Image (tube, rainbow, N blue to C red; front, side, top):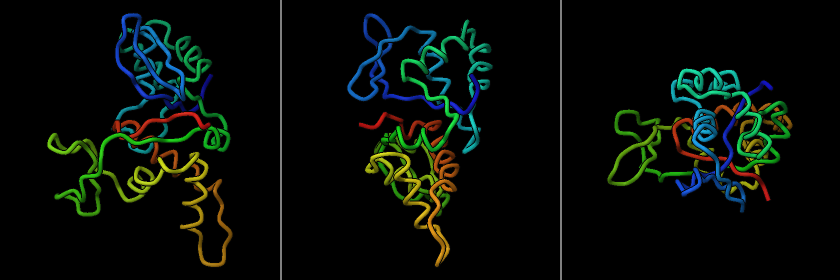
Length: 190
């Protein structure tokens, strides 16, 4: 199993029998090692909008002392808690994004940046205009694909047809940035 990886679900905290992650209307309880792999699937902020792969997760898991990370990736993928993206169009059509944090306005030290975080506690991340647009509007879109269609329409040259397939890589890059910074999470559609 290779490919770009994204975590799916919203963290619900610790229960007596494990960590809880909600996907759609279902709560999944997983053990500590599986949870560690799920957390590592979020990526790291240093990657920015770059690709985060199964190999990255497995490598970081080995550094953290998690045994059997590759098997955990497969189990989490089968359970719908991870998405190993082989076809970005299929992935974008079957997943949606929701946001965490609130907008805090322009970043004082970077006027083209948009701060998000928790009022009174501070800034969690400063988003560029494209990431901010996805953060701001992506949660009202029924799917990531819809966000691709909107971006393609907005960025198409005058007289040219919108091509959502070309926007998928940009949207997934923005999504990677948002997830790695804890500003958004993925869920399934419907």
